[in-house]
Image 1: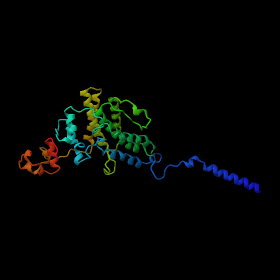
Image 2: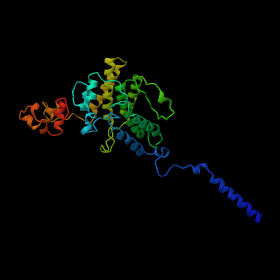
Image 3: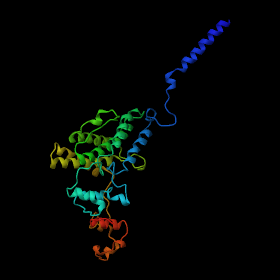
Image 4: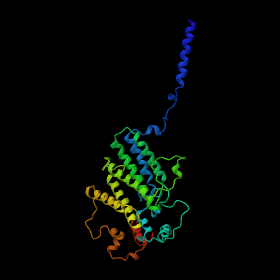
Length: 324
């Protein structure tokens, strides 16, 4: 009887020991942090991840697609007003604007590192591609998923359009790369191939991002109308570039721009703002502001700078081609 008890006890112990070696039991995901294997489940997970793109785009220098997040001393390089200094619309002569002066006069030399709005911000593309590869893991409807796929592809297409505008051929990457990925050492992708991918991204976005996210415009996600406006702008730039600098299908790009813009104008919920004063609406900077001394007939050139206050002073100096 004693032997039977020993045998039974040995079998029980062996069972426990073998069970303790169960690899699946030992392989556990961290419970105190988010992991890629456990994150992508709900629509809220996708929305929260996509919030990252808006946060990253606040850095106008790395990701210059939504300029205007800087004020004060940094405003001279992160504002659409001052970007006109690259052309002949403005002629700023403050030392802070040397960057614009060199380019405008054709004296810019090949830089040794990334410049403003230059060859940087590629972590933005990586973040987008990581999302696109993982969105299918969420247990949600295809329509719900495509809203966030469209949002991500809009950002990727917009980013690449800016890079092509600055550099021409650029490396197209549409998947997550690792340190040993061959694409890290690949040649630049031809401009027309990149822009074909950009058009696919922007078209998908305009077809799947909702007209209204149903969140009362908070926290401020881009809607379908914004996607169409972005597409119109990108296609107009690409179409005119190809028309006047050489390239195929210029008319197709211009047609895409016109159709996107027409959709916004005819069916969008927006309209041009009007004050009921068409003689002065949408006019030069100093006329929009109409400071009190202008109504008195004062000579703008003789008004002491210290008399003016922001933002009127900022815009007056901008109009006069300099900076306070």
